[in-house]
Length: 490
Image 1 (cartoon, rainbow, N blue to C red):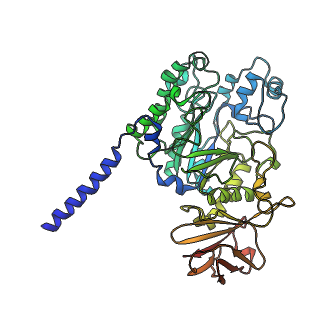
Image 2 (spheres, rainbow, N blue to C red):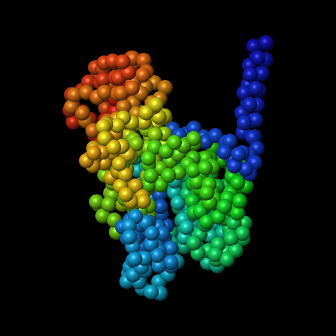
């Protein structure tokens, strides 16, 4: 009888503790909001897929080095900015030549049909890519929503996928399919809208009557695992009432205990407050105190840009090395795809995802659920941290930092990750005889194995260095050779 009462008491204490944790009240202050721990699944996931999809996917065009999802802004403002020098009228000239002067951006809404969209097929592709979470643009800066909601129509006409174009709840359909294959489902949401009349004339009304009820509707209907904010930069968080929104999210919403948020909640907030910090075309080992994520396209644009050619896309090897580079420094990679207006994912994007998945199937244990080692990578001799002079970091930077250096520049010879069981050494290229890990101060390993084949390797420890003898390399035994992983068992 006594044992039963002890068991009951322990259960009461355990459940009571969980209840107290779940019921912590968050105040609308950054100090309180920042005190919330980002759920562990996010830091363990390492690889996610971003999806930019909307009416801008109809023209699917902008000059190379610009974002095609900004088509409406380029068109109506007759300006361009991005990675290059532009006159500013390129999109206007293209638009008038292709569609005519009287064709407005809003006319693209009916052409955004999504008639070939198969959410289950998308979800299967994402699963096979090795990604652990998805982030879909539920609404970009043009204001068009991929789900039915009344706020999408308060500009005087319908502007959502259930009433205009697709006639489908695209957020709902994809969320259901993604969750069914065991992946986390996130939703991107733009706080502002370029040409909403309230945003232009009465920002306070826009926040109170449009933004806040709309984003709450999105969260309540679809219970996302990630809420990825953007378009925050024109107003302070106080004017956005972001802290009040996040307090509601963590105290009252259905996903209050599980949801992950990013850091784009007001002017000057990015990389200072929020859940995880975001970089964009940076990917360089930032020393953040919170989880972080690098987002970038496979080419340059996030939305599908039919003006980009095969050579504008990063190779599968460079994408795998980007992932390794980010993960070794403690971050996640959110890699973007841009479907076309009918719901096709371009084959080149599918190929890249499947190639990454093939590599992760063999080497994923060096990526998922890992954390940085004392050093993220080992440099060769020479000048470190090669960067091109452009504003946005291009995809070739990682190749220049690993296998194709500029004269006088060092390369990252080895990357490192670890978990409780082992250290992982990731080689961006094959070395002929041996590799030496400098400053290996840990105790002698119990064994060292080649992850792709499982074979045990010879090693030698001298002072603080560990030398590992390279195995015989048989290409037929290595399913994916974008990078090679040695496992040092603790």
